[in-house]
Image 1 (cartoon, rainbow, N blue to C red):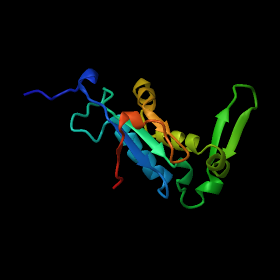
Image 2: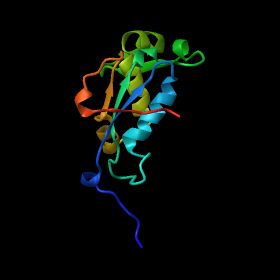
Image 3: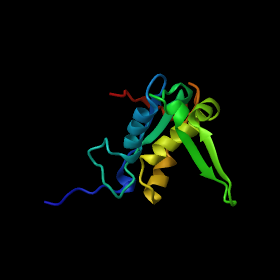
Image 4: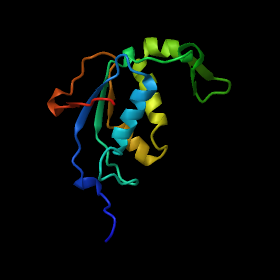
Length: 143
């Protein structure tokens, strides 16, 4: 008897919606990364994109515990000499909470083609409004 290996075109993909209000940023990101990767499914295959689509709402209300809001920083480089930009998470959560959530989720996915493919199935919104009602998203209850 051989092991079942899922194929990308055999997998039916659903849409899930996760509310991040009042929840830890990292815990929400870990749950979203699991769904995007497809590890919650019995048909999970490591080299195949088995994941589902995820909508994260209320990203602005996600919580950073401890002193992370003041001490944690996001670094990016412009490509020019000496132009390393630094933004504290206090400013990032105030101005671009979607980016903070995306960075956390992207760090938990594989850093290869499969990870980039998984990130394309992610939609993040700062508020509670989204425009994906036509996809009939199912509310995902975090455990």
